[in-house]
Image (cartoon, rainbow, N blue to C red; front, top):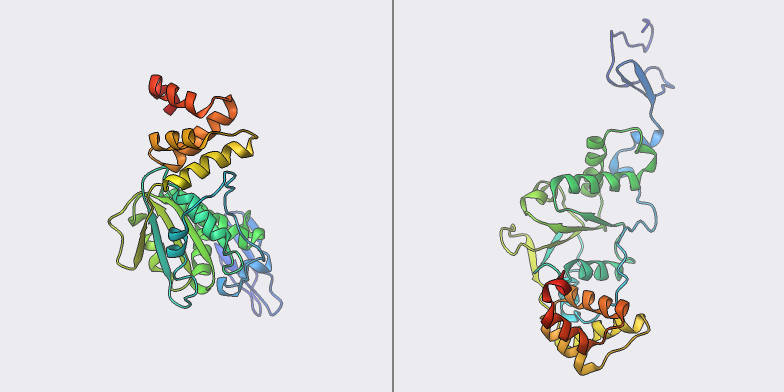
Amino acid sequence: MSDGPGSITAGSVSGIASTGEQATNVQYIAAHATVLPAEALLAPEAVAAPAGLVNLPMRPHPFVGREDALRRLGAAAGDAGPLIVQAVHGLGGIGKSTLAARWAGAHSDVYAPIWWITADSPAALDAGLVALATALQPGLSELLPLPVLRERAVQWLAAHDGWLLILDNVTDPGDITTLVARLLRGRIVVTTRRATGWPDFVTLLRLDVLEPDEAILLLTGILARAGAGADTQDAGAVCAELGYLPLAVEQAGAYLAQTGVTARDYLRLLAQQPAQLYR
């Protein structure tokens, strides 16, 4: 570059170079130059979340029961200030993700944004944070490298309050400790099979199988949506055989709805061909 007032003299530049009173911010990478939009220069604390930013997964099956779990999950909903972290734990198929999605959806007028991340590995957590940064500032998705986008998402969360982050299917508490350590405010709901190994600041909420009447309501609700039905006693026998596990009941309901098999015949098939039906 040439010498002069406000000029920069260098053999090569990597990063942001600004010259003069009306400077244009240009990022030089190797032999290429990328002009960054003004939004890229905003500090994360100055970025406002777009209205209605929610990415909860679809939950097409009916939701039944869980009043006590929903109450416990929402016990700290009105608290402000410090970071709140809760971990819903239980067996696979117990309905942890369904519960978290249900609770979050019912509080869309309380939290903004509401952001769901499948966090079963560090890479998946990073990808979810990158997606959050992109949702907050769509114009940056093609301009900044992924690690920078991830860092912007973490800085945004650290600088704002009133957001809800759902970290779904966390397998190792250590995968999220670095992230959580940088956040001072907001709300995090974790779903996990792990009941131990969590820091003291994490409130644990154990989720169990459905109550018998709730399981029957779930099964008959799935059938009703498909225009089918089942005898309540037979439906109860199916749910009992499946241990009132929500995922197993949902799969049985889908099987009955698709095949037209009665609940009583399903029990007979389950006794004769358990491996096939469970698969």
